[in-house]
Image (tube, rainbow, N blue to C red; front, side, top):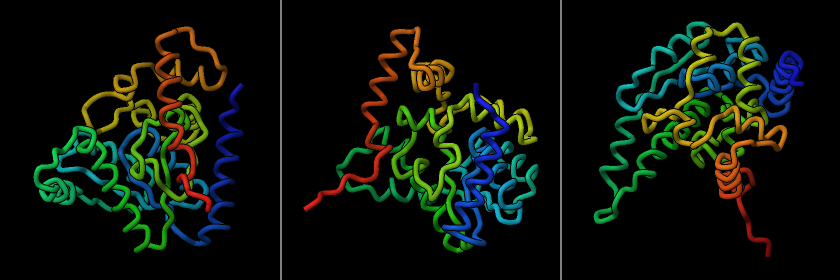
Length: 241
């Protein structure tokens, strides 16, 4: 039932309208990982605003094995781009961690995306930009993102679309097939998204759209993650005096 062309065109118009209200003449600034979400979000912004108003930022943490995909994307779209290696900042935080305070594994994993988001906002402010959130709706549903890292941004073109829907839109955008079909991974711990989640995106997407999940173990884990991470989908809890 999903109409990819209609949704793609509506999203492009939504981006244009958003910028008219919230940043007329500004650039769209986004991190380019080389994966499907950043590639598709960038392509949507190019169609909406023109390539001269889209800036990609490549942010390896030292060496990045698949950075060639990021270069492929920015060259394919013809957009301006910067490369900011975050390794010094990442190592600097860990080096100056309070003595006696152990650095947890999750701290190490989530530190990089938070530094990347700081970098995006620094470049955005310096170039009169607005930061693109590239998370998709499937990731958002189960909280598969880093709070104030990749889940941040000024506007979110993909945040209500499932992975399968994002892919369908990607095939309409004349992007290199290897980028659209690239197996999603977090780029942090060396595992694929589905390895980390414990279920497939196909099962998650079907459950989100239909409420049906034949695999009882998948359903239980999806429900647990969704409930545990609902706070990520809400504005910050604020005391009302």
